Length: 422
Ligand code: ADP
Ligand code: ASP
Ligand code: MG
Image 1 (cartoon, rainbow, N blue to C red):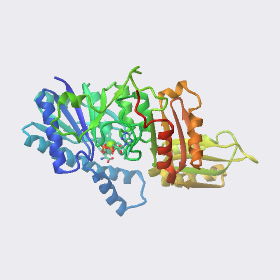
Image 2 (cartoon, rainbow, N blue to C red):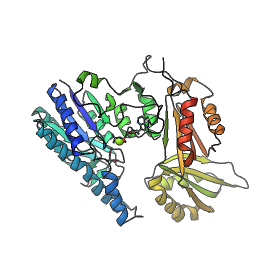
Image 3 (cartoon, rainbow, N blue to C red):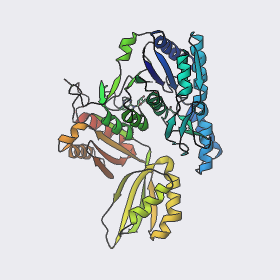
Image 4 (tube, rainbow, N blue to C red):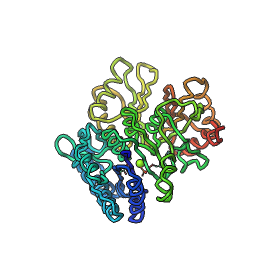
């Protein structure tokens, strides 16, 4: 008997029929003798619908008190899902009980709309499991130290599932989704993308952090920190397929640099359209400038990604960085109100029509010339690179959003990712 956590994404929970199907699959695992905790997302489109309503009422608000209400609203999507899945399980003859995040409780900090899980109490869940019940826990949400409902950022149900698996020391966390594993890049953008049987934890971390939405970055961090065996697999296979076959399907996140793993120099390509570029123009080139700009941004709890500062002419320079698009307006307001006057900089300008495309691979450590091949491929397509950032196992470029799909497709070809590996 093993303790297994299943996570089902929005599409997998997308209709009453699909929820019944999830219940049948879970029931199969229970009948095979396992203890099951299930973490579903809101039904597909529901979180967007809920947040859309809030935006209709108050399009530009971004105060903390507004964000608190967004979490109150968005968290209801998952609350509906757990209730529906529990009654579907009961209809299958399986004892099931649902909990919202605050009931477990899943404790988080107070960073509304992007809260971090701080601890998970396992007492209640363990008691139910011991009583033979399936426990169905809301994805995406928690409760802060003041009892406020929080959410974990878009895609956060992955993180709930892996964190619950870590807290329960589960034998495995299975992330069921609408693709049958992790691919060399998003198969919706590049149909030639190939599924990876396994991906190293480090590569998965980079892919997720660079925008591959198949797993939320924090779920991968949890998997790494607590060594949770985690697998991404399809919820669209027939629910009654052989359980051993199902358990080996999809993509395993591997913690060893296994020799049998596909050793490509570049393993995958990630991209995202979620960022916006902000440039503070005409900044005096003197010590402390980066700190004055980015310190103010960090104090407002806004994450900064790519940063560039150029050499100065006449003692003035431009300072550019990217933030999440959701934080764009807030960041520009903050810079105009607080930082520009103090710095004596000329202006703040922004560009929301950018994207970031990244190549990822642990093989890049030991191979030179990979980044230049990337730049060459983009230049052959006439794509201008606005910003570049590199680490040991990735190179990212910021380019005009309209070239995103072209760039991803050409890079996928250039690095032979569409070729089956021997
Ligand atoms: P869920 O609702 O199950 O959480 P998501 O939409 O969040 O599903 O994530 C699954 C989607 O991630 C896929 O449908 C696919 O379009 C996208 N995706 C992006 N990059 C990749 C990748 N490298 N491999 C597989 N899927 C990817
Ligand atoms: N329902 C949330 C979202 O749409 C969380 C998730 O699906 O993981 O972002
Ligand atoms: Mg998701």
